[in-house]
Image 1 (cartoon, chains in turn blue, orange):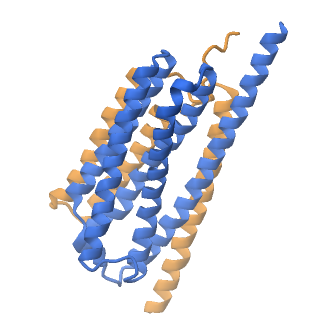
Image 2 (cartoon, chains in turn cyan, orange):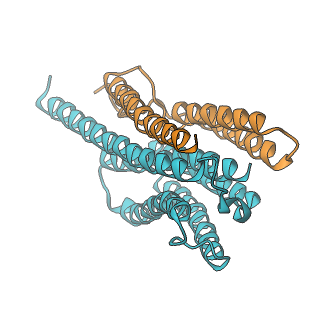
Image 3 (cartoon, one colour):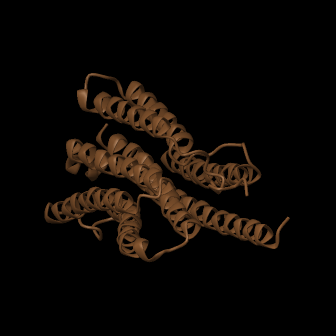
Length: 197
Length: 109
């Protein structure tokens, strides 16, 4: 083996360890969401308490939100495909579209929160309201952080000269972004669909 | 080097797999929302449908978008850690509900 080849190989191993570390961070984030879900279910579905949330849920808005997030997930995958074909302009375009879809998702959610608060379902009303806003708000906060990250990557990409560094960074972001969509499946099932039943 | 495109245990990048993922997730989401919005089903039917759809969609997303697999050493490490996380999630959520609902049942009697 040439010295250069060994160096590349070691570099690749280091990258692999880094990505595995990021994966472990996502797993701990899963546990954070798990405890928020447990709190939400305990406070909302005890049977005897009538959930006030039910009167405020508008499922068609949530459906639109869901499709914005799903579409942004798909456009992100297209960005990754473009990255492996080394077309930086296309990557930026797809990331830009991902950003717009994700931003629409956050805008709808913030709008919904304001609407709920105006109707009297504010975060400090009772335990049900607090657990609802904590769970959905934590997810929304993660999405907002993801949006900031996407924006940074769009501007940073042209300055990254080594392909493997760009690939590694977008792999982190991709894991994070897909993870948020997976959490959202359970948010809309447990919070909105069960709440509206 | 043969590793021109390191995948970090996230599998091959293929448009066809992403399209399958997008299509199945769309269908499953529409089924879940449709059942609840139609309003002509019993609670038990809705409950079973939306949770089945959610679990299938979870698997579709993990396989098609996160590209979890067991092909390489790193992919197997990722798989091992997600299984461990699922075990913890089941004990945290299931355990909380079990305790709280038992308490609730005792209080009501």
